[in-house]
Length: 191
Image 1 (spheres, rainbow, N blue to C red):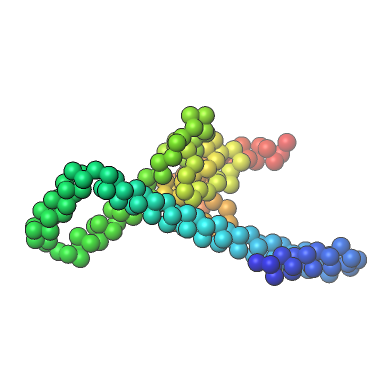
Image 2 (tube, rainbow, N blue to C red):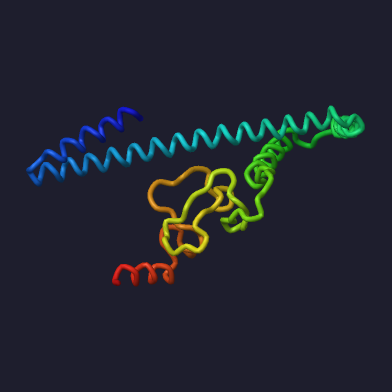
């Protein structure tokens, strides 16, 4: 990452000193590629930090559940009795049961926001109309009424390259925006 930043600085210094317009264009393109590369590296870092945060949050939830078992012995006995009953029943297909458990756990991780003390004045986002949590993506339509969306609510697992438009702005086609929002964007350009 530091190499990319140094490259940006070096190319920019050359660009400021250059008089030839053709060479300036080449340096400008080189600078643009380096800036895109630095943005991609930054996005990767953000994704790694988000994954680490999710792991820490999951571990905190697990520890909280374990501490509740230690604090309430009657509850832990009920949980162990239920586990014994479940273990005594034969499984139809252990592979499908494990797969179902994994997918259910993954779905719960993705859809359930972490329980924090929520400020009533905090703004809400996304199609789900909830506060900001987890990884989010912004709609590239400047006229989008919602702006920010949770990855899980718009079925994303990572940030796509290039521009991204929310389901409301793009309409039925994933690659284009809804015609009504495109018109307002064209109207803005013509002013």
